[in-house]
Length: 499
Image 1: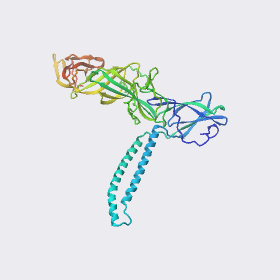
Image 2: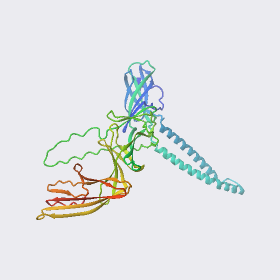
Image 3: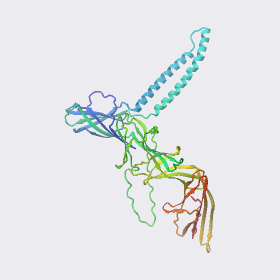
Image 4: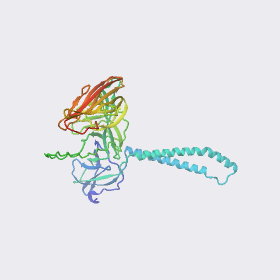
């Protein structure tokens, strides 16, 4: 860095903290920070010099001094004074660790005094000392063990606190013409990577008390910022982000050939780690019924503006949307031999005025957690899976699996498979089960498929699927018979593994 002229900063530079921003736009991958502050002007070689501090990791700096032209600006490393919420927690923990260490040192000194023999004493003094030792030493040993345990816990808490940046940047601005004002208002913005947010969902299906068509929904934001300062009174805005790569793939060539050209495998897209190590969920149960955010879906990316200003350094969780979806619950069976599970699911058409970004989710049934997953709404519809229902199951009975031949001189060959699916419902109320089976995909000419089902199946050719909607009475059973016959005019290998 140049040391002369308007680049010079007079005086000794002490550790200081960056200025709290007026607004921050947080995306899942970082934040855009906007700062406004009034800075003193230092005249140097007939030029006005301004100086401010950026936090560690600040990038893409944009500066504006209204009414003035910036001739040049430069940066150099700057030690930071930690003033954020995490710094205060770290200082408190460090103070308590030092206090515990001091008490441990005093205890060790007391034990050493009790355990060291006196230089000269009478027999009566030795007897009295021994009695006092028996009363004092056990208590000191217990207190020492408790302090050692407490010290270990405090050190673990300190080690698990995320580190705030120790070094930032000092920015020095030189204005092009002499300045008469002693102070000037400066606005600047920068990008930070050590902050952001991610959506987190909670879905709770209500199956009792006449609420079998409702799912309680909560969309929350897990927010983190490790800038080293608290963003006091800043307007915080959350924005969604497009999924996948930034640019499309190249247009594929259309080759017409007698031999089919296999389609290239798509390149794997690395999904951002769902559980950032820095995520820590604060309790959201005390969130108000009216979420403290304002949703704006008019831009390319959805935006949520927080009604409460400011954000302390660290990690927090904020309720964005709380709703009750009218989701008709349905039970889904995709039976295979040895698998009796029937899955509980629900579907909901999402309102167009609300945005639902992809995010991790916790799934519950009547308040009982059933698992975690990833919520990815597509086509304006949400499909929710709540795991297997332990009170509904399906039993697969294999009735037939045979090969036959028919016609003059064995001109045709047939293969027949037949199953019986027995659905059992131990709920008091009836349930509707959607039973799905794969439809054989025929690619050879001269091969036909026939079905003999009771009740008849519905065919969904686009998905190569057969389905039945079966009503199973409360504390009762229902039965579906399914038979597939494949006929071929020529020898084809017997299919041994039927899905």
